[in-house]
Image (cartoon, rainbow, N blue to C red; front, side, top):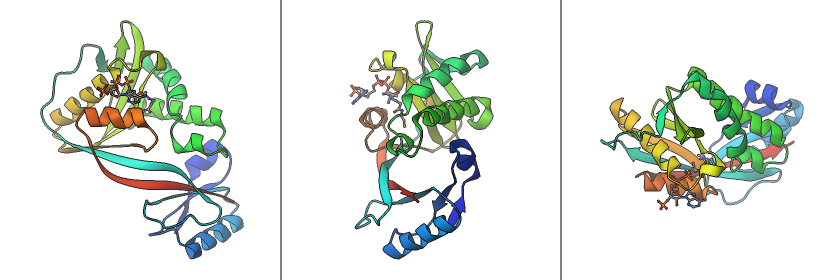
Length: 223
Ligand SMILES: CC(C)(COP(=O)(O)OP(=O)(O)OC[C@H]1O[C@@H](n2cnc3c(N)ncnc32)[C@H](O)[C@@H]1OP(=O)(O)O)[C@@H](O)C(=O)NCCC(=O)NCCS
């Protein structure tokens, strides 16, 4: 029912686990707390439905997770401001990643050091560029790196536009590039996940033809 997460544990410097259960009942929560105490786990993640009647003691809801889907179809050509990632882009992409993902559940939880959260997203984009993603597209505002989008299997992973370039259509150009990529690869249905509180991302996906399919909640238990 609980798995230890070695990568998160090593990265954040305290023991992290994940609870798998159908529902966060008081019994499940109490057993989970005991298990964490006896295994020195400081933080436990749980992804559950939005219908849970109440939040058991110790757990806090840190994110509403919204999943959007788009049924693939022919879409416009990739904008000339967007091209596939090249190695020389990496440093700029890491810098954008460090500042861009502040709506995610890690920043919503004071247990997680903000500088480590910044590094989490820098690491995520670096690994994506190193082959974890199937494709990474980068957009440019004249000659300046303005943002990125990553694609893996049938999903969009990370998307961000540097603050100084936001609101000028780069996000849309990046999502359009990903849509074109998925369509040319024969992917029938594309998914992307974002946070309920992330109005900019939700609007962006909706404007690109994605529709919300489901919502869930992330909970963190501190022990
Ligand atoms: C989400 C993000 C990529 C959007 O990029 P952008 O370049 O500003 O987006 P665009 O200019 O292409 O705008 C696309 C649509 O979103 C809307 N939008 C952009 N920012 C918005 C905001 N802060 N609030 C509400 N809507 C917003 C735009 O108005 C536009 O819709 P419209 O055509 O109806 O006017 C950008 O805000 C960002 O990098 N945020 C931080 C990283 C992030 O949250 N990534 C998504 C994680 S899943």
